[in-house]
Image: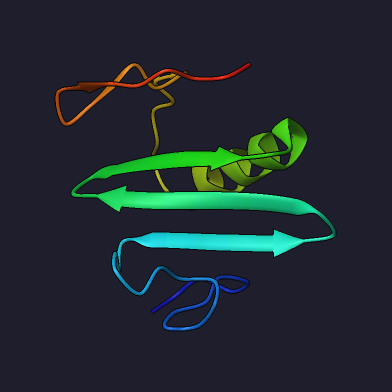
Length: 80
C-alpha cells in the first residue's frame, strides 16, 4: 500500500524504479528511495524533510544516520 500523498504508477512515481516515491505540493518536493531496510530522503525544503522524518519516526522505529555519504559503495556528494 502506498502512503497517503504519494502516488504509484502516476507522475509521482518513477516508472523505471518502483522503489522511488515523490511528493510535491506548493513548490515543496520530497523524494523517498526505499532500498531493502533503508530509506533515503531528499527534498528542497529542510523543514518539510524534518517534519516528514518526525512523522516516519512516530510510525516506525528509525535511526537517522544524518547526511548520506555512501550508497551501494558509491560516494555521494551532498549540496548544502
